[in-house]
Image 1: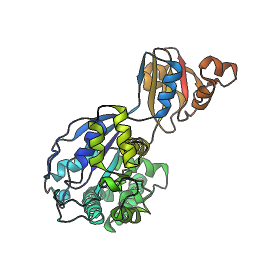
Image 2 (image 1 turned 30 degrees about the vertical axis):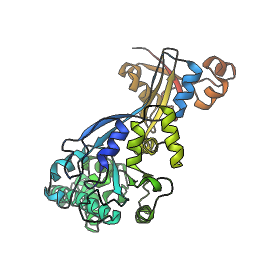
Image 3 (image 1 turned 90 degrees about the vertical axis):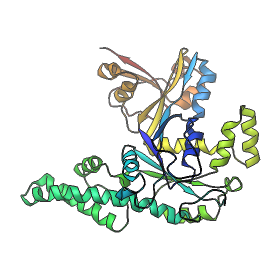
Length: 364
């Protein structure tokens, strides 16, 4: 599962990517600096794993991760191949969610491709390019399905009805994510279309350092604009985040954050938000060899969770031994949880809860 960082050139995408991944994507003050999509495997900050480490004292710790993709800046006309448009749009299509970076700071030394700072216009520029590309794909698909629908093919008629609704929304400059599938069949079809504007999105307002806590007038404009999208808006100063990553010690970073009025780096907030946007959650295994956070889809069953460790665990699943994270921390160990009756045995139908501490019994 991957989240792609998109936006116009020079809004801070590659600098943000560097902060998130500590990879060194090229960052410069001109468009099309990032040509190939850079992929960073980013640890998901989670205070729960630190607490488990303190209690269990394992030999090693493995955090959950999320893949972040730095995609080159889109420009007007990208849907028609302007700039490196087709390649960029293809890179976005391969992602599962979108992190849309908007420039919300004034700085005469950093060129804006459209001449001045206006996050509303910038958002609309990106949205329109993505919508135009989706419209092109929807209309191509409709050409094929219309013929089958006319013959009375029920599946084709279902697909045509959904495509017509999506097409209408796109023509009104609305994204495909505003169209909700009305049946399981439509849900499967929607997934198969792989539309860019159907992907979940969160907005990152890149502000100056003095606006990192409370935002500014540009952030207010963005929040007002997206209030009906049910999308999260995160405010962070990408420049300050870059400075934080350059500091050597934890203590230095904490002093820097305190001076800014922040409790933790904005990058940490963003990584957790991306993880959630991808509909991911975490369960833990906790033993003296290793404390580890495992990533599963929200709604995964115990056998599916076991399969993340190894496919044999899922094939030969017998049962899951489960302790709620809060109980593990409260009693301090697996043995004490057993004594207190907080140790549960769950079967194949069990839906894993975020934070469960688990062991699996299996036989292949």
